[in-house]
Figure (spheres, rainbow, N blue to C red):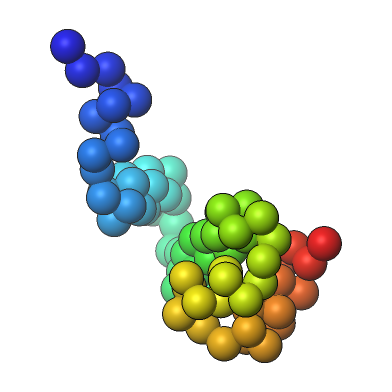
Length: 85
């Protein structure tokens, strides 16, 4: 018998984002969203950076390689999200 937690692990990240956006639009209750693209990127990028840094134990060279971005770009993003330790 599968638990909900096991079932969620098999869902792609996009399914989680779909569900979150569906809730977001529902909760707007008729109000018009603004700057949605920036908001979603901010909401996804920050935990992504943190998770990769945790995975690499803070090694920014490895993290930038995993993310497929330049180290200086990673450093800039870490500064934006105040994740530079």
